Image (cartoon, rainbow, N blue to C red):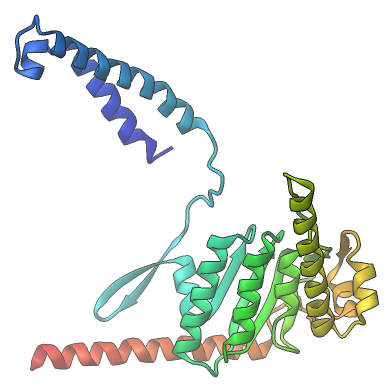
Length: 290
């Protein structure tokens, strides 16, 4: 709604103004000019047509609107810094996947993983998942990056990890795959659709079968289950509680509170950030004194 308002007011103001401006003053030509009349009429029609569309667009819900993103203020001796909450969590090596997994989500997550690896390849990255799944190729882009980087990736399911999100959950570092008590996990085979000639549909069906075979192999690799059981379990939607997901091999632990090891990691990360800020401040003081 907010981005629409300025355009709405501008169009309303112009439409009202155009109705009151004489043709001669607007186009610097004689009032009897047929060209001036045609241009003025065209402008009025344009704004009259645009106004209802803006009104309807302002009331339509956005397709992917997360609402207000909180800002975090960090105080230092050099002043204040403002971060959106996800950028602040990124400084703590926390990456969040919320909502459907699509190409735009994958590009952001891949970029964050690569950045955190470049910062410190030996420190773990914490991946928080609350997703119903999404596009297979987008999910595999994140999966391959998790395996590619040197930093170990710990995974934690909050809410749900369904479809492709369940593969990302189980793809975390061994012993570091966790879920909260009320989370849900779901696995199933890939699905898709095709239209066109029979030969085109056959090509797409063959590709889906290849993808299903590849996904089954990945689940078997990370869970330790045999391929036949994976195929049987993924034939239809299979929902699991955290305890059932642990028994299946998708996760290693069900946790209710943050483990002390993770608390100490968070404290040391905060100390590293504070040390980095202090170093920057000293450099700034030296630069100003010189």
